[in-house]
Length: 332
Image (cartoon, rainbow, N blue to C red; front, side, top):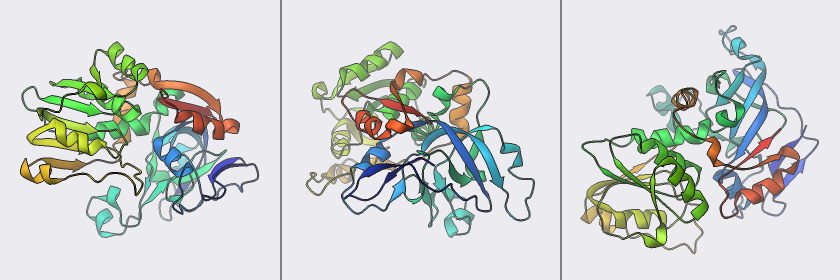
């Protein structure tokens, strides 16, 4: 079986052509991905020099369920998935810790993250994921759209953290996939929304959507925005957000910068002095993302910069980090 694996900082990312077929533990399904998307976490792990453990990369996928192994006492649960096209939540939880039993399973104490920590990802001919993580893709949603379910859900989650009153001023930082999707979603609310980025070609997509936009170098730091959503993936994103948001405004952090030790420290005094609400935001609701895609309420295919195949994954991962690239998809 083919698998795209990170094998440590000394070997980096390699294409393994003899990876063992994944086991199907109780409560899991085996999925054969048809199309996968390369994300920031894949690039970050591929470039890691800090001892990240070996793992098969990939967390954005659409695929077909080949096999299920229902949990004991639930023999029928999951069998309806066999042969269906699915996408999946990337957080694998224990179901037993205080977070899981208290309704906060997304913050499970023992959580694993597909293709990132503790469970091999989807850049392979097959991979395993819990049945409870799977969501059937509606027939009206093709593979090109379905593969965006995970990043779209992350953008949806950012909206859930914001309370819209009146007609607030909202700035989205970052012109990557989540930033562009967030700008598109927030612009549907009763708000004045603008996207701040660094790449003219990416900002041109916002132009086609009718979303206001501006280059980061041209933005005034007037502390007049009600909400700033940082999707920049940059260690400087929070610093800029704090310069843009008004007193008692809200900053939503959508991405964790893979900051090196040399990265500048952020002055957090404005958070206290201006009573700014700082909100972290992670993964989001996959079913809600699928409904948006099924209704055609969000454009994701404009974000496809390049297509490749799993056999050319190493080149594709490299290309996904080039200036102007938004989303690279691979057929498996």
